Image 1: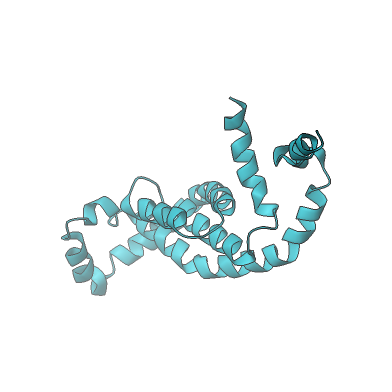
Image 2 (image 1 turned 120 degrees about the horizontal axis):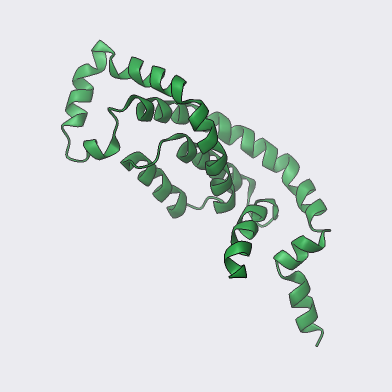
Length: 170
């Protein structure tokens, strides 16, 4: 029972461990942001989640940013609706959207929903700046935070260093 409580905490604090590269952490934050902004229950969210789990990104960073940006996505729904409505009702793009929606998998994407379309557009446009910012922050602050966190007994017990040293001492 305790394992189900400790595992998510280990996953989230593993962002600060120094065994992941800063690029993996940054890609995890960027893909988690994209997953968090897109409304769930469509093929886009499933595809992004599959990409997160199939690629070599930092899962802790992806999960943490996905949870965080899910709340941000709720606040951006009016903007997403406005952007999606403007994009979907644009006369030059109407034939393209009609052709795309006639594809067999298109109804599962829910691309005709203005919030899904706008959220996907916002997420795709902000993916690269999020990656750059997360890469800079992880390169600068991860070693400092990891060094400070390793001093706490909770961190040592959480990652088993005390258990391992007491077992080897016998």
